[in-house]
Image (tube, rainbow, N blue to C red; front, top):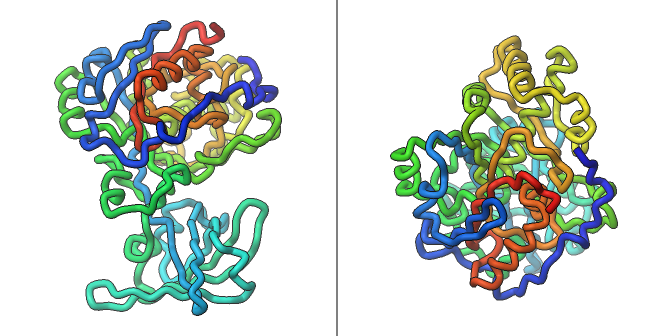
Length: 413
């Protein structure tokens, strides 16, 4: 496996006109256009016909995270607006679920719009009525960090969990490149139809095109489906500003994978395992490397996966079966039905895929880690794919169209 630390992000750019960025989703989810890439060839269809492009007995793995209403607006007594965007819980919480269940108050890492107007020590207040009851939210500036603020949020009634509070007081945060105010329809359309576990501040957008009709067609063809959870952080939109990838810090995200899902992947070696979205792909590939770490350490403790570890561990050449069995042995030993940890894996050209055979995904921003992941999968043909999409009126980014990309056996071409 080639180490991608010396990659220059400027080599992974293309011209994306503003008018090609979708501001709204397609009228019907599964009517979105689908580009199919395999063995250097490109074809077109729509998502409704997805099952026709996948082999029977393949396994599609989806990310069932749910976008939380992470955007809170406070109005100062002088009339100024302060926007608080909750990114992730403070490190004092063991995991995201625990932070979402907090009552009365919680500590969060946030982006703050209008921070210069917010004096240290000033407490912001927001009141609203919900089913005849008053809900009051307070925000206290605690600390300024390099890339965010630490904010203490408290509320009444104190019996509300933080998840419930956001549902009442917050708004769905659309990506920064969608230049409009969120509308009521976004509460539904910026969620997948199978969204389950709240915790993301951005949608796993590859899944936005799937409908009950598509799932029925997959089942009729004996295409298996399974679900993992990766809570998407705002870091997914973070541009790469460093001169080389060595200087870029990849965002870490929480993953939650059941023992049954690991077993399904392990029992499906001869068929195609497809990731629906880059988050699902990062989760699936992370399972292999977490298993490698367990195999090496003898299953002594739970591990997180750091940014460059996949490249450092690749010299061990541990088979997929052995790695996943080591992970399952560790889970069994610790009586765990679910693996909950963090992954910081950065997949870029030079990465050797261990499990995933293909990817269903949207079209990504220039100079982004998401585009690097696509280039790792299909090699230099990413330029051919994106040029075709631009030339044939595909819509780009979160609310845009998407593609089915099969892993290129010779990604260097």
